[in-house]
Length: 170
Image (cartoon, rainbow, N blue to C red; front, side, top):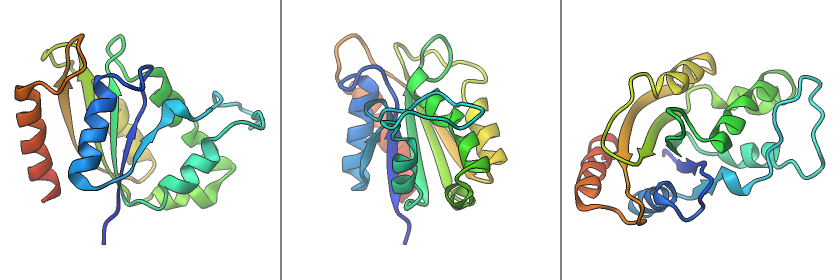
């Protein structure tokens, strides 16, 4: 049986992206992991990290799930810094913690971005697709959503998300 993890990275733990992540977690009965709440040091070529670095502990949890839904706000036409750190550290899984890196193979990946309006951005999802392919993950699909200044799941966004969840996870 498939196990789904909802993973998001944002500067706002209570923002629109977080609201979407928690909504998806409720709909799919899946745990939500906030990478922004985990101390993740930037990738270091010598693989030297502070004692409080929580990346490996987080990955030890996440490799137990064979379906990942990742969410990120759109910051300057790309993923959040929190999610970028999370992805950059995958390099450690290819060199240091190969036991964890090997478990990513075959993991299904969906990605959702949340911006301030309905405008979509060409190539936003390309880094996710290419990184998934490099790690032998199975990239499934992506979705662009949006939210306003007030944190609330707008009716048209909820309809779009519900239809997408039904299509992807039923």
